[in-house]
Length: 343
Image (cartoon, rainbow, N blue to C red):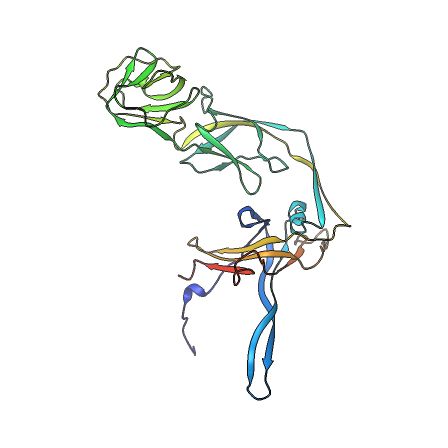
């Protein structure tokens, strides 16, 4: 017979956790596949008693917390980061590899991850981006933007479109290569070499992607493409950036993989503290998250090699001990538990 009922169903936690670690909260890197993730808060309790008035004070000292798990991805870069200050991690680069015509569909301004990465987690080189037909070469920071994510992969995203003029009936095509605003000024000024995207003209030749060649004449944008003379009156919108949402682009780039990685130890004695975080995400995308602000390894590295016919891989147990970071506010120096699931 049941003795009670569930009081708060959203406090019943299911699932494992993602382990992230880094120099600070803003540069956390995913450790990867783990088993037996665990966190603990602990301290020594002290009690001051009197002979005649009972307990005077109860307090804590040696306050700390622990975070641990068995690492399944034996990544020397990650291990070196756990043991920053004591172990030395290094790499040797392999020969550069050229990639051509990697198709990426750019939707909104969401970042897409390029398939290949540099071994040293820097931005890939020789980036060229064209439309799917290969007839237009897109311009970085006008049509698209490039970034490097926390895992060292180069990303590409459609640049946020800047409105040069929106919904105006005062724009005409003059001659065969220029857009002219008859009153006021452009809301934003394009630069030579930019791509603009034009909509609203009656003649289709005046719409679409155009390449800016001159902006020296007031209220005039001259482009490389052939236009058709058209008077003002239509409702015209001109934006900076030619790539449209959900458009496919082709990316050429060169990446340099690694030939080898090396982790060395011996002779360095002082740890550099790391930030560690466990994150559990439920089916609704809500997180239950534990962050330790200053953690160092509790012990060394053990690698037990399994039998050749074993199904389980090598596991590397890592245990980190967190202590208060005195640069933070008192009462918030050791850890933070953040909960979106029980709200």
